[in-house]
Length: 192
Image (cartoon, rainbow, N blue to C red; front, side, top):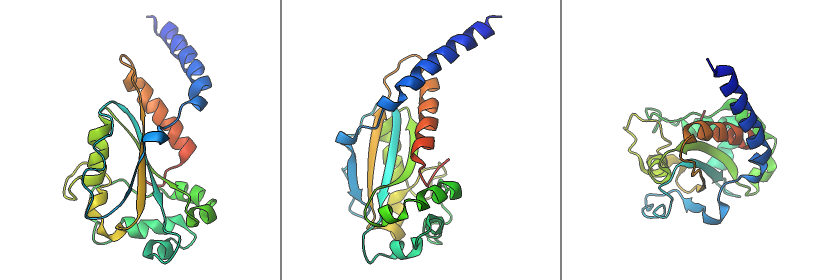
């Protein structure tokens, strides 16, 4: 069986790819920024229907906000908001305590308006998946953030950017590798 040879070639390709990873990033020029509210509609129409990664970020208001007071210098407290009784029944990704601990090290920056790495995912259709995360009905059993159903966080600013992966043959190997790389690099507080 040629498995050792195949394994060697894959390892060689991955090592070559690792050297190029630092030059790969999300498309910040075409990101979409939105304030969560009941008025969201067509903000997401220009998102690519291609495959790739998507990255949500959140911004805490710089003054006088319920969420700001609950976070209170520890992102682990965000779980109280995310799993609020009004949305507790929803199937959605959870707050990751270990990543909250990483975010706590930059708390001052985040409380002063810096964007917080919030959620990272991969999809074969970026447009559909991002719209699911924002607009999916709270009673759907598929995992999605269901942001529009979370009235308890209305008023928070979010932005979403994408990284389109136009590989044709081996994208099912490339996407998980990229997702793991960016998850370790960005430490989003919600998700896997």
